[in-house]
Image 1: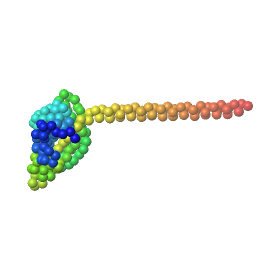
Image 2: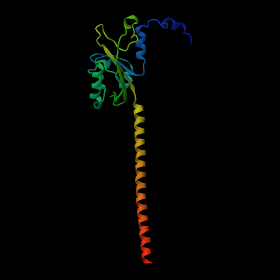
Image 3: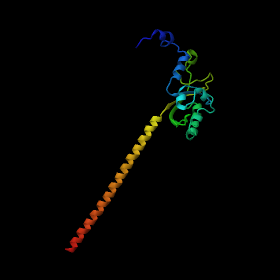
Image 4: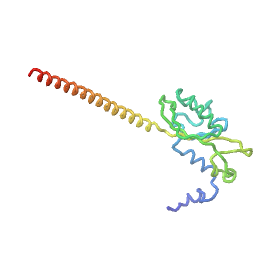
Length: 206
């Protein structure tokens, strides 16, 4: 393992030491995926900078939206995703639910969303981070929120659609070939029948 330089030694915590909260924030802000944290009533509390790439809106604009993230979801998928969000607010967990986003530029990219409740294992107060748990609960055991992660699957959906169209084309070719073979078999049977009648007629003539 490459040793740390002097600047890193002055800034980075050592392995096993408490990790300051700003490091967790830097990790969350630097992720490729669109991340957000919601309270147990569904209100968005935080979102990372990746939302700008997915939607064209800044994190602050999203925080000011009523019913976020529903305004960013295409109308056809909105009711379905609203139901999922209600489930997440009461502690539900899901993975890779697909829907389309309404980008500011008018495009409709596909995303896959996953969410899970966030629990505190006691590490929150000890090191300023999230501990080893997944979601926060207060002293009374009430759920405080859930984490949402979204990733862009537009290219995956495009390739999936191409594959579907290709398979449909192959199936059509198979059906056309089967129909052609059936037609040829029908024609062959007819020709054999005519040949048999011709032989019968020739025998009668003699």
